Image (cartoon, rainbow, N blue to C red; front, side, top):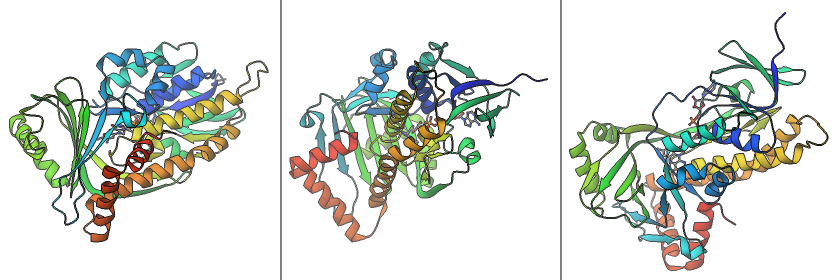
Length: 394
Ligand SMILES: Cc1cc2nc3c(=O)[nH]c(=O)nc-3n(C[C@H](O)[C@H](O)[C@H](O)COP(=O)(O)OP(=O)(O)OC[C@H]3O[C@@H](n4cnc5c(N)ncnc54)[C@H](O)[C@@H]3O)c2cc1C
């Protein structure tokens, strides 16, 4: 007779930043967690701007101390209209001090972020059991959900957390549909060193083909996210380092002086989607299993950490160690789906509108965009409102 599968309060599927952060936070909430996560197979040269409460989240779970030394502070954000549209927006600079903060947040490289989160998982060996293998199937069992793994093992859990990215197999197995759309864009990502200082300022140049963004990444160094038409990105990605650095320098008016490409380059597809439901039965979705959108205003992983912080709070409220009562997965999933829907839909829609307002040739759209940024430049309350909205700060 085969052994009964091990039972956990929660099974988290996915070992990207969302899955690792979820496993750590939920173990800290007192749950026994199975983390089903093979080692990430691709090098990720992106960086993540951690805004608003994201750094507090990492600090609370003991992850920030490992990242702090290599994190680049973000004090100012500047938007420059680099289009040749009829209605052009004025340059606007947002300063964190205007909303009573020293900083908007910090920019960290995804490699060290994932490494620090993996170390935090390993440090919780009492609360997290890691299965370095793929999730295969999901089915109901008496005590909860039953997950089979490609190693041949199986586990059961009161609640399943899908953090397995945009093509989430758990989401599909739970029967949750997505609404998705595409953009005529791709992103080129790389790091650059440059002669002039960045003054802790991230700069978004808005062009007709999308934003071209430089984010501080250490002294004299920035990371670039260049969104453009796929054929332009393909051409740029094919240049040698010196020619590419010159092209980047030209596009940002040499404001950072001479530049040198100092990382491998990566291309990322750009699309948008959100799950039609964030929870079903005893399954919840977090991170890119739930939502994805263009990298504008550094919103993606910050939204993910808000998913996880909310789930952590609901799990804490449901777990009563003194009674020994098992986690009520269905109740937790219902509360989570209800609590997260407005923030998720609001962010996905907001970023979609921002991106489309750049791409649109429709004059009234260009006018509204330019007028909005004019108001932000001239009126402190509008500027502060936009900054608080970007940080999801109260
Ligand atoms: C160019 C670019 C720049 C960005 N910049 C920012 C930024 O500055 N700030 C910000 O907040 N966000 C940013 N984002 C968004 C952010 O990078 C993503 O939100 C985040 O990386 C998604 O993490 P995730 O863990 O949800 O998904 P993923 O990183 O895709 O991880 C999913 C994991 O699940 C695993 N998996 C898949 N299938 C299975 C299975 N069957 N079993 C087990 N595991 C499985 C995969 O191997 C993978 O490790 C950016 C995105 C892009 C494209």
